[in-house]
Image (cartoon, rainbow, N blue to C red):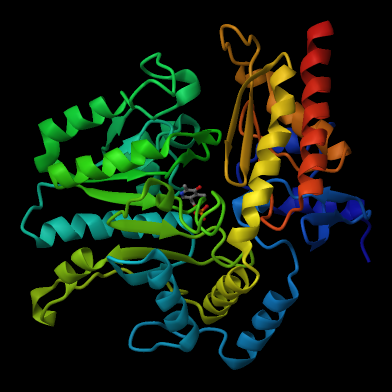
Length: 456
Ligand SMILES: *Cc1c(COP(=O)(O)O)cnc(C)c1O
């Protein structure tokens, strides 16, 4: 057998890691951590060290690692049918999951279109929205509106509607043109207003744009309530509620990218529930199989679906399909996930944990370099700043988030940051005691890193 060092050596030799600068990776200070197994909220490395999976393995894990019921379903389904095409053929897991999703989302949703991951679910939503208007005889409605600093995936369509420079800048010549509106980033409000009294002034810009160009706009796409990849920026549900009304007024579709937020993350099954609205199309992926294997779905209302329903010769078919569309193992896992959530009352059990997280976040207020503390549901985020008064951020090259990450690793928590933002997005099964422990680790790591830098 190979030693740990040999495995790492082979890793560095053969694997090109995502979002990773290998020159830094191969440097003195850091080596990839070789994970061997997981259980509950913990993952264990090859030396037996355990870490709290505080970022839910890139926001996908909801019920913890290695869940018996899910393990069993994985095995059982693979012994029946591991995969079969979903055009002209179907299978019980795909049917059962679609029915459950439609019923969970409620009226007026009626159809589930499967794909493989968040990016593809978004691609499907974009194409669906465009083709919808095309078939309604309005091909000029071809623009998509999205927020600054939004993230909708890494494929080119989703990069087009995305707004984060590091993912987009280089590819600008390749992506299609979109319209951007200012994100409701309350800590650094674009209008310099306060969250409690602003009356959602940032929607004025959206309304102006809609008023001027609604004839050309197909849809607006949003990350509901939280701009995740921008740094867990939480914004008021009222924004989404009023946006729905604007979309109705100007006949623009509302696409809700629930990829990161669905299945309990915000304390409800879907984030749109907080706003008391229904989008026209929404996307889910992360969390759908509780974090086991990739699966995504784009869920449409009857209004959308019926524009595609006609005689074959009318060419209104939605010509889109991935090889693994509606994979039976993935769908069976998702069905079991939803059954567990229902039977074990996961959503109900969250309410107390959400309060515990809120309370645990209080302690960060006293830290000198904590500028903003954000919270919704089972997400907490701490934005570190160089200067609390001026909100001056740490520079990109200071890598403060990364330093906190390294410090926290030593203390047994995976707090992989987003720039200067340290966040908690643990599996939903985390206990109140573990929440306290996790936030304690983050507190100490942030304190050590930010106050040490000061002395130097
Ligand atoms: C992660 C994410 C995506 C992309 O999902 P992948 O599965 O990584 O392709 C899309 N939208 C949002 C809001 C996300 O957080």
